[in-house]
Structures are given as structure tokens and as C-alpha cells.
Length: 338
Image (cartoon, rainbow, N blue to C red; front, side):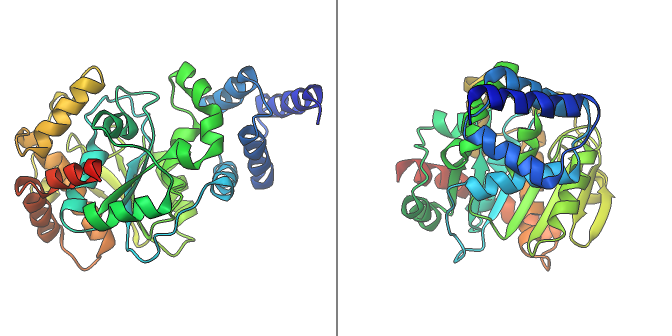
């Protein structure tokens, strides 16, 4: 198709969206396939992404975008492992340290297999990929190498651009915008290994409900978390909403025997170097009480998602052993040395 025709098609799509029309699931799927094929220029992409910052995305649109990403992704098969992905949307604007990534290493330190999906930061100081890269980890989509990581370190890392051509195609535009887009919403839903267990965090309640709507149709274990004061993880700065296949509930720190903490207690620094220093301090068992309790609480919930029969208290003790017994630290050391 000629470039002029492509431009005309996107103009028609944008005009429809500006007139408050919605995309069908099939239309959303096709548009994202065209984006992956790099049929649109940066101006088209920026305009298209901006629409979904200005009005809520629908379940059909999110499902359609997800279907395209999953169909086009480079898939890996970890079906022999009972893996979990622990990931947030990002985009909460809170500039915390890397809670979900640290949680992943603690969970792996307990012996649970983790297939962590992540990317560079777009709207915060340091994403999971920034962190792993700073520690010397080499991104790969080689299934045999990733399985070796799972076998030896209980964790592997799936860097999104290595698996998702559409994400790669919009990377420069997202980085230039430096704003949360619908790609932030998609990331947690498109792990190319399709793990059996998911702990997902969202920056708003509406997205949490959309996730729940989409995931409750699938035969997986999941927990979707939205902190009531806007974090995309359990922050202990407030209560949080938890969605699972069994329903939804609000949980407060006090319900878990935890103290509420100040937002400043989980600040992540001003750059990747700051974030990496905090990350290593916590993994060394030298974090503050607030930092430790946040990652341990997240890790405990992840473990209860994998095993519904496990109590939060038991899971919390397992997480403490992994952190303070330096098993989580050893997990990171193994991963970057393989």
C-alpha cells in the first residue's frame, strides 16, 4: 500500500477517535499490526497514542491491542515450569525504587520460578530493564538460554523489545513523549511466555478493572493490585484494591500487621545510578524497615497467588528468609554471571 494511502487511513482513524468513536477489537488488532510493520510515521504514532491519554481505553480496544502484540510476539515455552510474572504498568508518577523487580528476586530466592517481563523506563527514573542492564545482564530471546537462567537462578528476564516488534516500533516515540501511554497498560498483559501466574499492578482503578475483565476469562492465577493513593504496587502508604479470580477486596497495611509508611520512604532516587544503589542496599539486607516491608509484602502476595493454600504470614516468613538469608542477592549474582 502506498504511503499516501496509509496516511489517509490513519487520518480517518484519528478523525473517528477525535469524534469520540471507539475501535472494535478487530480494528484495534489491525492498527497495532500496522504499527508493528512501521507503516505510520512518528506524528501519526504520537497522535494515536495521545488519544488514549485523553479518554479511557475500552476493554475491546485493550483486548485488540493485546491480541496483536501476542500474535506478533516471539514466544518462549516455559510450560514445564510453574512461573509467575510480577510487573506493574509503570506510569504512576511516584518515582519509587524498583519494587516489582526487587520483589521478583526475593520470590525467586524462595525457589519459585519467575519469568519477569519488563522494559526500559518511559515515565519514571528507572525501569526493570534499566536496572538489569546496569548490573551487566545481557538481554536475549533465546529460549534455551532463558531456560538455563530459570534452572540455575530461578528467574529469567524477558526484555519487551526483544519479543515485541510493535513495542520496538514505538520505542522512540514513547521515549520522546515521556508520558504513560496505552503501551504501559499492555506490558503486563503480553508476557511472551504466557506464565501460569501473574501479579500485576496498575496506576489506576479503571485499568485494574479492565485487567480483571480480560483475565477472568483465562485459566490462570492472578492478582491485580492498585494502591488507593495511586501506586501500581503494594506501597504500604495506603490501602490497596486486590482483584483475583475469586473476587475483589480492599486491604489496609494494618490488616497485614504492617505500619503505614510515608511516600518519601520508598523514593527511588533521581537516576538509574541512584536506583541501582538502593536496589543493591536492599538486596544486601541493609534496607530501611519501610523498604524491606514493602518488598516483603509484595513478595508474600506473589507467593500466595501461586499457592492459594499458603497464608500471607507463611509467605512473608519465606520472603524474609530469601531476603535476609541473602538468597535473593545470590539469585541476582547467578543470573548476571550465567
